[in-house]
Image 1 (tube, rainbow, N blue to C red):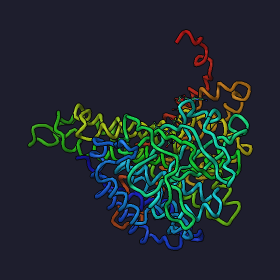
Image 2 (cartoon, helix red, strand yellow):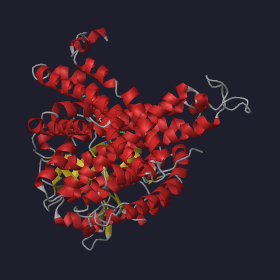
Image 3 (spheres, rainbow, N blue to C red):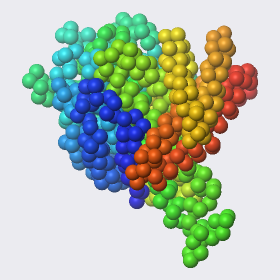
Image 4 (tube, rainbow, N blue to C red):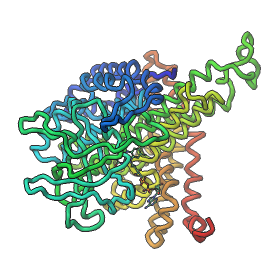
Length: 597
Ligand SMILES: Cc1cc2nc3c(=O)[nH]c(=O)nc-3n(C[C@H](O)[C@H](O)[C@H](O)COP(=O)(O)OP(=O)(O)OC[C@H]3O[C@@H](n4cnc5c(N)ncnc54)[C@H](O)[C@@H]3O)c2cc1C
């Protein structure tokens, strides 16, 4: 049975020492989030994930979801009860506004909880995860009436949410979508069409499911400018808030897929289902982007989460599995062989996953805090900077944390040799589950294009310049600190490569857009490496300070500092290769005629 322990201590280091949460207590909801309260909340969340969610991961994978002859969907044994424990524990509304029944706590706590949930059971965690995204979209774009009808039930978890974009002929290119909406004359619309790949589209965990559906109102312009967003409940809601008739939406079939078997991926048939417009007519993509951006960040967290749980299992195995002797002589001469953790190649693998996990966690905490500032600050300048940051980092968090999350799940599986390939160890599941994170919520190639094509140039490059200035200033401030030299010098070099790549795009991609397309994925990863390097430099500084305070944490802080040095020595140098690739342009990539492939 795979193991999982939520990294509460590591999170508390981030929230106490690296990005002290107390600094933000002028923001609504933060005054209640004292370090002690935060630690108690996260310890409770960890318990739920370790004791309730994690034990259902392997069995949920093996059993999967079932579509019954009447079209209803049953989730794997134990999922319903686990979901109930999550919702009655108040986790759904942890950061939701109090006026809709939430607790109004900082959303960064929810982001951290998402990591624990996704490590312990990715498939199960998607049901509440999508609901939280739908809540965010309704808060921002729903009418007051819609908010009153749906939000309290969704916040308490009795109703869940979904997002319905994809159709058989269109995934990335939503401008082609065909689902139509015809006005019923009473303010509602009749929605008809087929959506595919709808996560949590139907299940047995909640009384009602609130579908957010993209559709085209009759006569609307073609392309993305004619798409509107609708709220379509599975069961219609009576005026007094009670549940009424079944709406004309059903799950036509379940997809048989590579991983996340415990999550119902549905073909959803809309047969004149009653729906209500959310936000403005023909501005549906804009409204749906609230949910998509939330989901993209949550998917990045899923990538990190799979890397973390796979790592924990690989470490346990590497300490236990006896094979061969250490290159420097037997370390456990009383045993028939040494545990494989003595071998440098095994260490290299484990260190590279560990160095990623800790930097990735810092990145999601930093991003979570920026999300709180963007949504809660009353200071316009502060809010704008945080919004810029969120725009810039969303594709990086989604694309980089999921690409590396999958790579790391594979690396961790490799530690098991042949046993990693055998299902009962659970490593194969981590690989299979992690794979989807690179695909859904906009495939990673699309994230890279979003970064290069939209985010870099937005507002005259304001966001990227602010980021460069922040990292540059940090390097300058700490350049004279001998104890940080091993972190600052490589970070400065990586930042230089990123700036050169950005400049190269400015000079070479306008006239020749293929140069941007061919270099986008390398740029996204170059960006990710520099951001993670910045996270490591900040963690190293905080660890030095903690160590100097001499409060019995020297060993832990030494481990932090060492892991950070590994990152700087073994991972940061990738920025040079990325830059070299980007600046070769698109010529060889695009030269072959299609027939030559
Ligand atoms: C398990 C699962 C769950 C899902 N859950 C949901 C859900 O809940 N709701 C929902 O609406 N959808 C969901 N999806 C759909 C998912 O978001 C899409 O599959 C994804 O966005 C890609 O769309 P597509 O499959 O049509 O691929 P395509 O759009 O056909 O893309 C194929 C490939 O071409 C590349 N490509 C396409 N266009 C470009 C371009 N312009 N430039 C560069 N490269 C390009 C892509 O990067 C990709 O690698 C889910 C999918 C799966 C498999």
